[in-house]
Structures are given as C-alpha cells and as structure tokens.
Image (cartoon, rainbow, N blue to C red; front, side, top):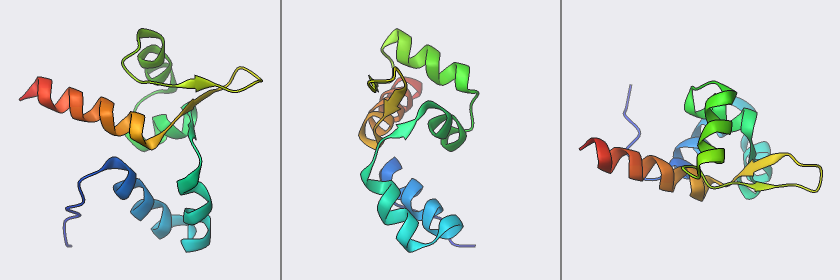
Length: 88
C-alpha cells in the first residue's frame, strides 16, 4: 500500500472522504467547517477531548448561532503542526 505523502491535514481528510463517500460528497464537505464530533472522528479522539482543546484555545473554533462548535481544516492543521513541533 502506498503511503500518503500530502502535507496538510485538509488534503489527507479530503482523500479519506473521497474514498469513503465519493467525489461529489467530498467537494461539498471540503468547503465547510467540521463539527466537534466530525473532528473527533477524524483525529481518533473522544469528542470531550475536542471540546477541551477548544475551551483551552489549543484548537481554534467558532460557534454557530445555535451554539454548536465548528472547526476549520486550517485550524486542525495549525494545531497538529504545533503539537508535532513541540514533540520534536
């Protein structure tokens, strides 16, 4: 199996979404922000972890009019890059 060498989280998520949902769904989903639950599934963590990261400011998010958290792919990329640089 060939290893995915793409540099951003956005690219990796889009590739996975295309494989699981089809190209049309990936185009729709790639433009919008992710919910806390979707982010948790993508990162392989519990939703409470995503909520904690948002509350601490480690993961940038915004709230919808209904109070739901939304996280952009760019915010996820930035958080992962910061965590990886701290680990190195």
